[in-house]
Length: 133
Image 1 (cartoon, rainbow, N blue to C red):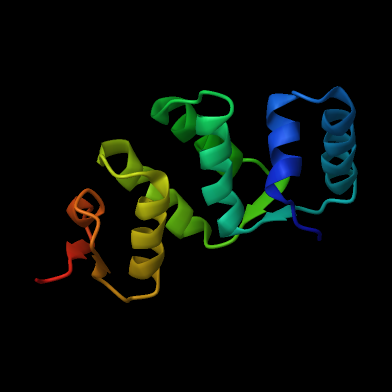
Image 2 (cartoon, helix red, strand yellow):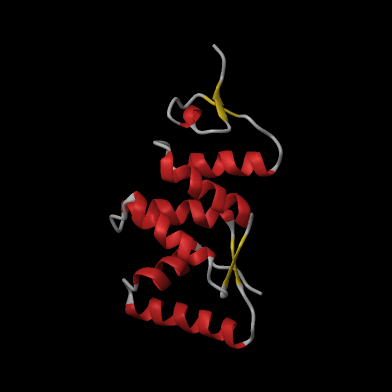
């Protein structure tokens, strides 16, 4: 089982470069034919949100829907999948960005809460706390 870099996943999803999109599709199709899943590192999830928001204009609901769909596919396997799902749930209601929600969800999954932060918005996420002055 191989892993996907953010740029391959972006091409697969957005089809903004025909040649690379076709190559990404062939890669996914080949994995499916072999009955394998392609691994998506948690860092790719963070970068994917940033790229889709900043380069492709995705809003929060669009990203949540897309990542939820990807999490349910058989061709992709996510690192710390439960934490990624938890981060999406936090992100739905939080004003904080996805990265902070994922940091908090990963800390929770590791049994290491609260997530201490100087970021006021992030400190409002359930499971995060502001560093005391």
